[in-house]
Amino acid sequence: MTLSSEREALKAGFLKAAGFGDARRQPLGGDASTRQYERLHRDGQTFIFMDQPPSLETAPCPPAATPAQREALGYNALARLAAGRVDAFIATAGWLRDQGLSAPAILAAEPAQGLAVLEDLGDDLFASLIQAGHDEAPLYEAAISALAKIHEAPVGDVLSYDGVTWPFLTYDETALATADRLLVEWLPKLKPQLVFGAEAVAGWEAIWTPIRAYGAANASVFCHRDYHAENLLWLPSREGPARVGLIDFQDAVRAHPAWDMSMLLHDARRQVTPEREAACLAAYFALRPQVDRARFLADFHALGALNICRILGIFARLTTRDGKPKYATLMPRLWGYLDRCLADPELAPLKGWLDRHVPAEARA
Image (cartoon, rainbow, N blue to C red; front, side, top):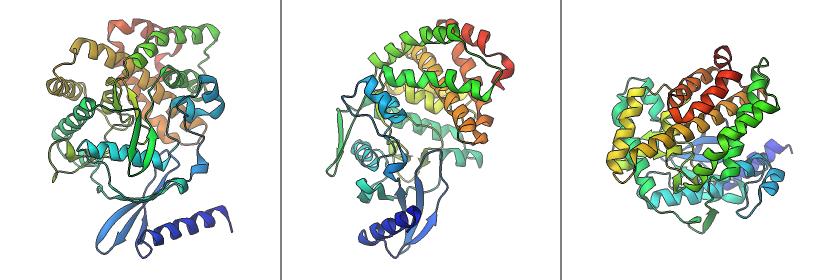
């Protein structure tokens, strides 16, 4: 029996034991991860079947691991990613649902096998609705209301739901360093005309060191970590922030509140205008009047720039290493968002570095 047929037999056995053995299975499109999804049809209802083989990912980060131990374990541990673990998804979904938010209910799961059946929140992704002509304003307003509610909720060091627990870690300096270093490692592999020598790399490191330290020291809220229009679903029959369906949140960490704002407003897959950005920030400040606006905006620009550089590095890696050229086509939009952040005078050192080492033609 091949590995694929063994996996299929395991999945069929799980579905049968969970009462979904007679469900019609419909494959769904994937993303950049190693997960696969199917829609299950049974008795006029639909459900989502998640398949995340544990062996396809490097290990997640043990809570007490040192930076050296994390490096030995691999990228997931360095970046504090959940390695696609189903127990991370279950525990995080439970926390979100406890806050009155719309994460999928877990109907059946075998975390050790990487399998789960979830509530189906539908297909009305914000990105798809907007592309089809839906007014984006109420969608973004709802996304901000859900984000503000998340940021107001206290969160402990462990997430738990129905006997499943997962450590809730901080997006610390090691993880943030792993993020910003992706650009200097992978962009030259996509753009061979770029050469970052030792002096350039040292300058890059010097720029980010204080920003990383500040971001880690001010990590204070639950951070979805992938909060953008392709991971948000419109549920207009629900009320308030619960109108926003949440998916792909298993990598959640404790982080600065500007991080998820950057994910939403520096969206690589669709253009968020400066006007929409300003409206969303104003709505957030109205919902959280205790926030220091000037400080938050400065943090949004600095950590937003780090986040954008992280995504640029990831997209360069996906294109060159993984043979997924579609991601390179999204990079010019990210450079545009980065220019918005670089208009902040506090980021003059970063702007100067990029002007010296990444000419305009390399940002196309």
